[in-house]
Image (cartoon, rainbow, N blue to C red; front, side, top):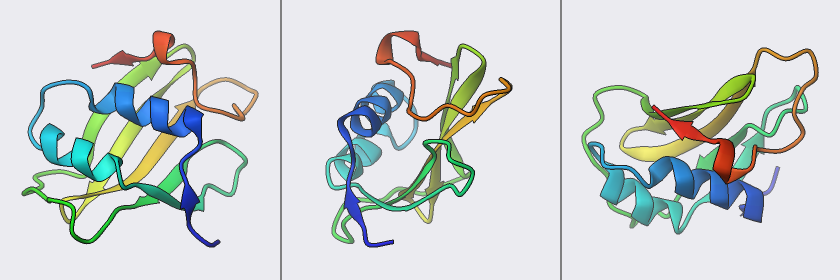
Length: 110
């Protein structure tokens, strides 16, 4: 897959997840402004792999999960590798696979 810009839905989801105050949040918000989708999950869900500009600031990572949030029937996770945004995941316990990220007003950052 050739990288592409984030859709409005992907960008809004990422912005909501990165809006809080947590270690590395400022750096991740700068990275998010340059983020592009570099891959997708093969199951049909909206989970995407991310790439950011090499010049964007990084931070010391202690674990891969930067942010988790709850949504009805599932959750969202922002992953970081080597101090850079690497994936935006949507997991669900519902029988039907979601086709898009949920509306920002139903996201509950933990």
